[in-house]
Length: 313
Image (cartoon, rainbow, N blue to C red; front, side):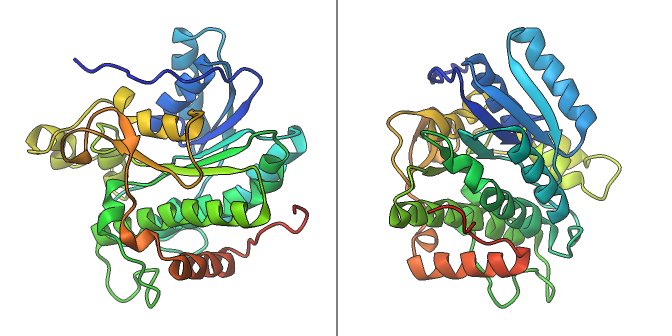
């Protein structure tokens, strides 16, 4: 029987944004942050799905403060619109949780801006959102940004010569690159915060092998419905897996624990690093090279047209 080991500290008075909050780890994170007293903006691509998830959470936690707002991380104009509206409506943002992602589309697809779908949605979109929200985040007394990576980051490498997979496309390798990039984003942001003396806590997490719809819905992109293999994949896999309640723990610990250190990376502590309660885990070596991290950051600025805001110290 799976047991929830982590209790989110009191979040009363705090505002959190969780991307991809309509399902999986995003919905679980939104629910538990709201249950701990936070006001939570559920940032979703499909508002109807977000409202359905909000209703589910409210049925369990009637006092939860939840708002659904639309964002499409595969569309930089949508990212800009979301950030500008939130900044106009709120004096500060205490917590940004970069959770949303897509996984292994069957063929190479592109975002509205022409980026390979996984690199664009999983990395460039969250990168642009993070930078656009930085002034709002830094206006909070103890701001935090937590980015969801993946165990697949361990197998990733940044192919600067073909970041968009235009020469050849391997969906699992492209996914690994995008999640390694997420981890590098978190680590580089922690370095920038330290260099500039910001009180920002930038952390990352991965969920291990958690039973969400990412493997099924994400892999169904371009199809009418998930393949049979995706729908029964968890039962066929010899690897241990876990429910979303436990699988969201690393993300919640990274986002809310008072003991979290800048640049920390959390994941499951159990078998093969795929299941179990959250613990600090070691990033892959490819995420720890300062020059590569800085280079990727510069490339992301060029591709998105979004740079560090000049109005913050």
